[in-house]
Every structure is written in C-alpha cells, then in structure tokens.
Length: 121
Image 1: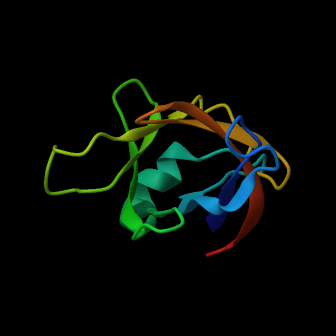
Image 2 (image 1 turned 30 degrees about the vertical axis):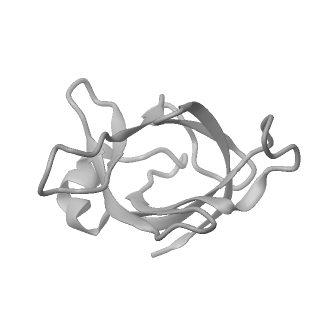
C-alpha cells in the first residue's frame, strides 16, 4: 500500500513550462481512491520519507507528518524545530494520481506541483 509519489513544479511566473528539476519525492500509503490513508500512515510513518530537490542545492530529507487537525506537512529536521514545515494545501482531500495538481506552502508562499509518478515503494 505504500507508494512513492513524485511531484514536479507546475508552471508559474518563474518557470512558464514548469520544471522537472524542482519538486518532491515522498512515500505515503494511498487508499483505493488515491488519497493519503491516515490509519496506514500511522502504522507506516517511519517509512513515509520525503526528498525535496532543487537545482544547485543539496536535497532536503525528512518525513511526511500529520499535524493537529489532520493536515499534512513535510518536516525536514526531526530533531529540531528550527526549520519550518512545508504544509500540503488540503492534502487530505487530494488524489495523488499522475496528472493531478497539488499545492505546497513553502517559505516564499504557495506553489503548485504536478503529480508525475505514483509507484509501489
């Protein structure tokens, strides 16, 4: 049930064609509809890793976490609160299937990403 999901930057003002060099790869358990399954996440959360990639930067490695109220975020330093989490906008409602779009709140605001791949982890 654990899936590896790849998100790539959708087009925006800085990248009119989008970018396959900016994005995320993360593991998450998905239900039959393609939504994150919170019960399975609880059981498998140590395996729900995220890799944030950007050109010219080292990859950030962290975990998919569930915040109070049921929202989802990427947390990069599990031993410190110095780095802010990147929150998935309405991730609980989104379907993670190729071609779908999701938004993530980063330091500089909300950015849109396209789901480019979902495969067994």
